[in-house]
Length: 225
Image 1 (cartoon, rainbow, N blue to C red):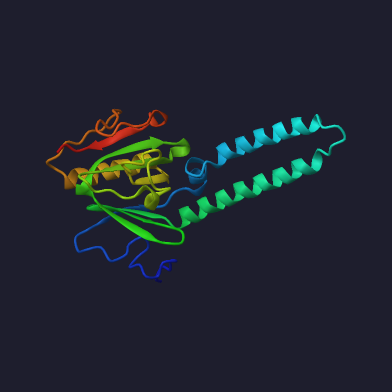
Image 2 (cartoon, rainbow, N blue to C red):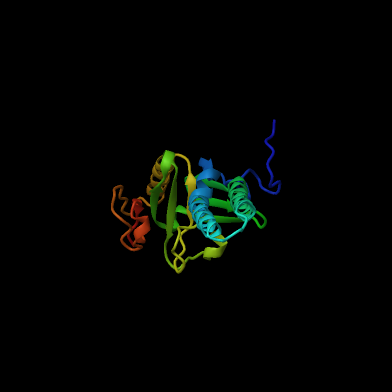
């Protein structure tokens, strides 16, 4: 029985065309939408913010003589809930329409809710990859491209390493079993770049230092020129 998928123009889910002869599929996956909502769309932080604003509004209304407290708080609560719900729904759609593919030669990223884009990242064009672990074994895997190749941050978002706007790094966001996937990428990259240096450890990416808020990232591969 043939599998059905939303993007019928694809040769297979996540693949715009059949893989060339001899190229092997190693892994396919998508972001976890709950983790994506928290880490990419910041639903948890906004929920805390809205809660604080509601508390301040409640304190302010208590000081108003003869003022109604219930209705203004209810209105603000409903608006905050709608905003958080829309963000969570966007995260769900983003995860549902995203497929990351790893072969023994490249990484493909099919992304986009309305306008679908597929980024083809040959392993020979990757200079480094770094894992930022999250709870439950999830994590982000940021990819550093070699040479002058760049992808616009807005075309990538939310599938980009946060805060790096000048040199955007494509990222596999909020993927389950991130450590295992990182090891697969390292093995495939090492095979394609047998003459380059491969490092596994806890050092940061020397040529692309991480911002302070991303200090938990672990380098999983580095190539020398």
